[in-house]
Image 1: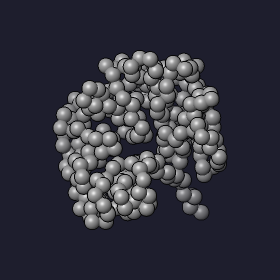
Image 2: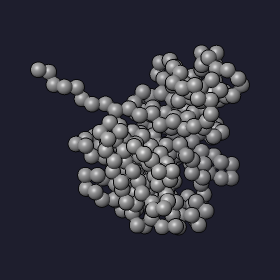
Image 3: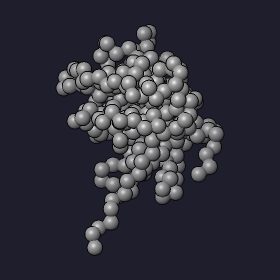
Image 4: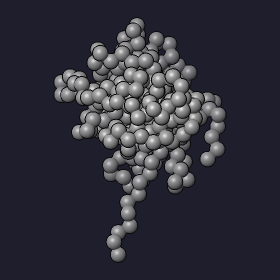
Amino acid sequence: MTLNKGNRIVDCRHGLVLFIRRRPRRRLLVWDPVARDQRRLIVPPELDNDQMLMFNGAVLRPASGQGHFQVALIAHARLSNHTRVFACLYSSETGIWSKINSLQLQSYMAMPEPSTLIGNSFCWLLKVPPDLQDVILEFDLDRQSLTVTELPPQVKARPFKLRIVPTEDGGLGIIHLSTFQGQLWKREPGSVWVHDGAIEFEELRSACKGDRYPLIVGFSEDSNAILVQTNSGVFMVYLRSMEFKKISNMGDFHLHYPFACFYPGAPDA
């Protein structure tokens, strides 16, 4: 597929890749590389104007399957000092966008990392001034509602040192990377955060050259693995087994969007 310069990848899940094009006209592109299929989506008119900025999105195939997909779009008003965030959901089954939901915030800074799917909710990281504390923006696909969850006060992460990850039981969790150690946290009922253990990356340290501390540049939901950028390249670190493998020699910083596509096996003869 040939991409225009204005297309920016924002998400990759369930064998689909989502792009946002901001200019000359706002469009979303859903690409299925295996099926060689492309679907272009027209942005809701309320968000398709110079006063609005689409800053992130997400894509999935619903559990019902049947070849359908859903796309979430996140935007904010350019002149509002980033105090209100807007979200809506598209269904390829109906070809219709949902009504636009919004949430008032004191202020925030959008981050470029893609979403993490937790249960049936898309989750993104935002930073809140003045101390740039991280919070989680959650878009519940069932209720089509937006909520914000504050992180533990102990977590003060620099850019690309934090990632939203599912817990072992599928709940909301985070990993906070500090040098070659990762701290795991999980949210319990009542929005209470509990420390969920630490991960040592000593074997990864020995495989790395130079003194750059690792940065989290991606997350594979299918493998439950973070992608870590170092001077020596990019490594995939599996959070359950703590095994790792090198997937690239790239030393320059780039966000990564792991692609995976699974098809059911053929029935027994």
